[in-house]
Length: 244
Image (cartoon, rainbow, N blue to C red; front, side, top):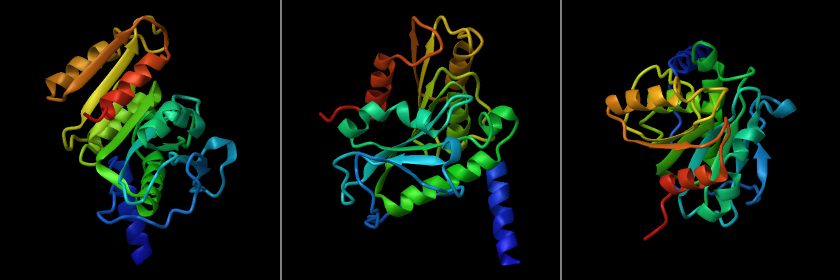
């Protein structure tokens, strides 16, 4: 009976898009992986087809130094490795933990209609990371590309009390369930994007976010539906500015 009640509470939270996992206030010292390698978390009983979650721990990680974390989400038809690859080239230089789950279906649940099973997997993935690695609670971001960017905006605004930063790379829309916290937001979009045309996507989304009171750093670039390396560098520097 107690287990049924727990599952019901978890299902309700997932349906509302709410994440309850939080970084531990104490140091986590029981991670036994190897820095510099991506690890499948095996949260769904197997990493078949990339439909689970990947964790990358940067070289130089130390449990006595809280590290920044970015939860990165792939676009439609992608998988965990695509999400991980968005910031992979910058993780070691910035000491950045990367967590990349995969959507249960071809894209994220809220993009298809409503929050649900993808939130549950992300909850488990975050709980795993927070339970085994020392994460800086002031430097937790959610980001993604294309549908992953739309989902990052939606889940990030709904959980702004966890995510202080949102990196939305060529988003289509936001479908947040509620507004919590006041995360800072970085948005980029190509002016020649034919998949998610800028005129009906970011040029509408960004003014709406600013009107709602969010601090939005917006970058337009000359190009199609992609993420140029320079934009990635700008996004990372925005999230993790160089130390003075």
